[in-house]
Length: 278
Image (tube, rainbow, N blue to C red; front, side):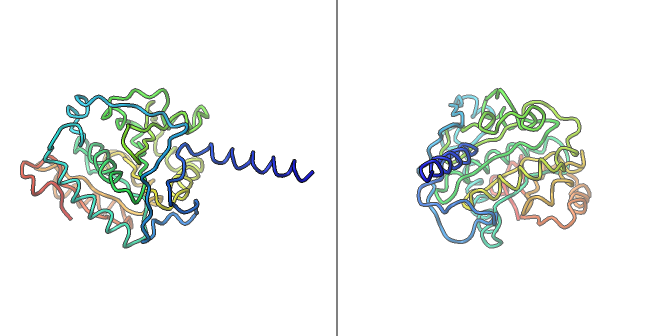
């Protein structure tokens, strides 16, 4: 009887492990429910992906889409390193591990900013990064890597597709992407549903050393970001240089209400020294 109990316990542990496609990094702590990164450093430099689909993005595609690492000596990389450092400092100071990237209006470059910030964060060996596409009406994160996923996050809710069948690693150490695919017109309802809340709680709390970056729609375009804001620790607002109006930015801050604004990013600036701002 004791042997049977031991076998059942091993089977339960294996099922729980299979639910997460990423093996716990070497030296990391056991999964917790606090959702905080903490101040102690851990190494996440030995990641083994057992079920997550690994893809090899084309270098020309990355360069064409302005994804950092897609071209040698890209000037934007220094700006994203600076942005990464400031983001990590602020998140560690506050014990945060989740951040949503938004903009006031469309075409400001928020999705590209989310992608490049996630890549830059993943280059740090003290944590892993999960990039989640929650711009459900215009999912685009996968396109920056030149990937056409078989499933997206909407399929997880509508069709019961398991997360391991949706996630992919773009051949960047410590980075996993939860992409969108099918458009969801009832996006704000899905973002505020109990199923979504359960998923976000799981994604943000399973590994204390993981940082989760969410790409949300423009704040003034839909109510999606407003509805979702209470589920994240903070927000990063992308401003399109010479296009975003001061009053629109002010309205965006007002609509986000009590959300902690970690900073703003000036995108499409001709001056590389103003590629980011706080």
